[in-house]
Image (cartoon, rainbow, N blue to C red):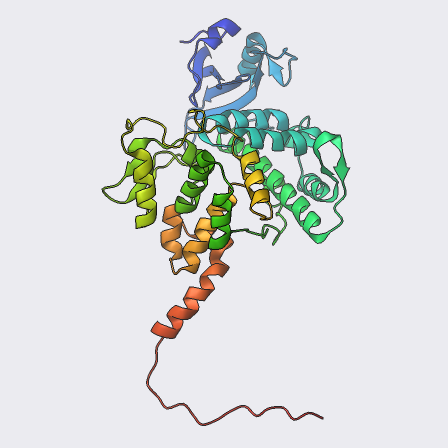
Length: 412
């Protein structure tokens, strides 16, 4: 049995989703789960003879005093946890866990760091919009009215600007942006609490499950460049950045995906580049037209397959935010309204569809598992080629059109 009695012994245990159990009485065990970061959690497990389903009843007792100071209620030492576990009656109803919202968020961020991208952005979202108002509250004390009021409050309060300044939402676009922020905060809070619920730390999730986000506010303007604007932008870039921009327009790949490309990812045999790891930790092939295939082959020829494909002028790899100022300066020189590097992905998708590409194929090229995202952001651009296809392929029966015309309206 594992030794759970001291912080040092618990620190040596594997950090996983599995619980470490130690027997404290006949048919009764004290459990401990150690996360990758932060404090662990105490559990109790009791064998209940003759019960239907699982013969064991479990309960979360509280947070372990791995770093926090034990208070005997929400944060427990080994002795306190063992005492509560020994006295717990599985037939007595009660709250499953005295978990606070801040603890739920900490657990979620610990998981998010290992399994998802953009950890820093999500952590900042929690710090700015969730923890100040809800962090100290027990999850068990949350109500539907409280969560809804918090959600609406984010939409109605001023936006925080750099330097500590605030800006009231005065225009329709600013009000829409505040609602988008409120929706993202709500989605993140739900994700953190739902993860605790799925892990068995919470009994009920009605308090947040039925709180609905604002509808119709995610329709922000999706900017893209026309081919002539792309050429002007390329002519305004330094050579190293020009290659990066051109790679984005040719593939629709994200900045981080392009920065991680290696020479061996250029697959001239199938006219494609291989994205080994995308935002969702999946790989994909992006197939290229002849012009793009020649461009990438020229970048990779003679290089070691493991060499970084796209480099800065100083021979170093492109890192976080290295593209931001360069993109802004190039737009200024090209007399283009400033846009971010990610809009080059939108440019690829928009030009792809407007030239007759299908939503299904575009979703595969961009790395989406379904067409939902491309339909949401680019579906309206498909109308031009859909109209042309309808004119060519929709049923026509060869019937003579009736000699009937709408009369012009007579003035007066």
